Image (tube, rainbow, N blue to C red; front, side, top):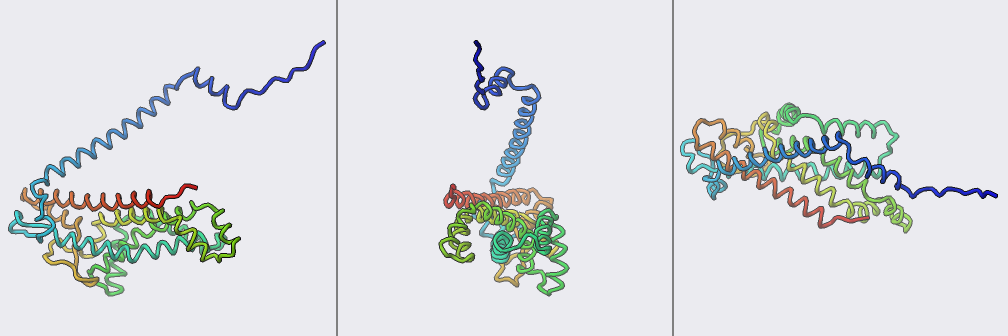
Length: 303
């Protein structure tokens, strides 16, 4: 007399685990892993070498003169980059004032209010994605033709800030949309079920939860804007200026343009000045990125 025996199904993943353990790592996979590590090592080594070279080259001029003195073509020993540093701060401040509210409000509209089936909403999304990949020099031509000459703003801080705002606006919109999209739908449903309006839900529930991602994207976008030189050269950024900007209608220069001016000089003293200005620019960038990391870690929520 025989009895039907139903074989038990093996535990999920057990045969696969035994097969992988028995076979070992394939040679191609190990080669690919080593190739990735080698590529990472090459990039890191070159970056460290460049940073070390810049710091060593600019070390003699890394003192208070670099931020307290104005540029001086005749006597580079006393030259500084105060006007470029202040111009950078003015332009980045106005850029943040122009692009951050516009980008965040656009992201809120596209994620919370826009109907994705409408043709104009689809057109807006496609254009935002395409504009994020446009070279910066194209924005410089646009700013020169429309903002500077067409609107009559001239070669001023406002023109530079508006041009850089157009440059980084797609980045702000995309990063803000991703931060808003990361908030769970259940948070919205619970708020609406308790009687809140859609705007109250967005303002009191969605936006506070999306602040870390939005702040990180905004600061990274401004970090890109602070290092741009090509569009500002087209807009008439001065390579030699001995006064600080006093408002939106002032002439300007920025650190990338000042570095470009010094590095093009033949005297060795200007090379040290350029290296010191690069270090100052890197310090500002690292400070902005550190702020982004702190905001992300400080206000991050785990769902």
